[in-house]
Image (cartoon, rainbow, N blue to C red; front, side):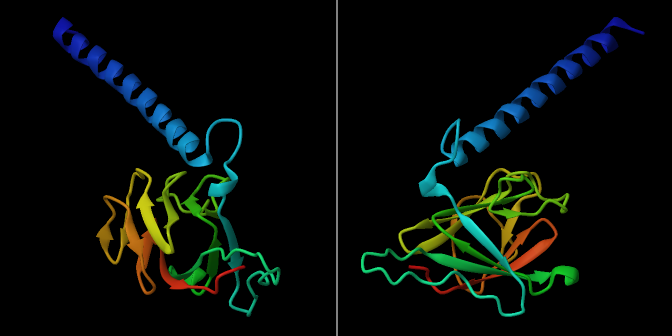
Length: 174
């Protein structure tokens, strides 16, 4: 084999090794950044997801305590694929991460088009926002690829992997 071809293969192998380390570092960085740091999660960022069936399950009962604080909430309803049609997810709290990782507030472990940490829905004031977390296949809102965080409005169609959700408001929890 010519020496020039061996040199090209050597540089290609080194580039692949660096790419592997970059991806591993990036995944660890995203996990640390969105979990509130090493050694545990930040309780202010902990989102809670309550998957609901269409059988009429109710969200948590509002607190009647006088000093209770309203927690913003949003509902994602699956509109495709057909086998999950109508499945409802109520997201409560200031942040919810969507992905295949087991610690995600809205886990999608069976969809191979979803990254481990794919997207997050978070609040700014009283508004919900959505951002892609550098996923491989991207996140889409109303057919447009997310390149930066955008407000999530009722009626928006959110595509994560093979699943499409429709966003709507749910009753705020006290």
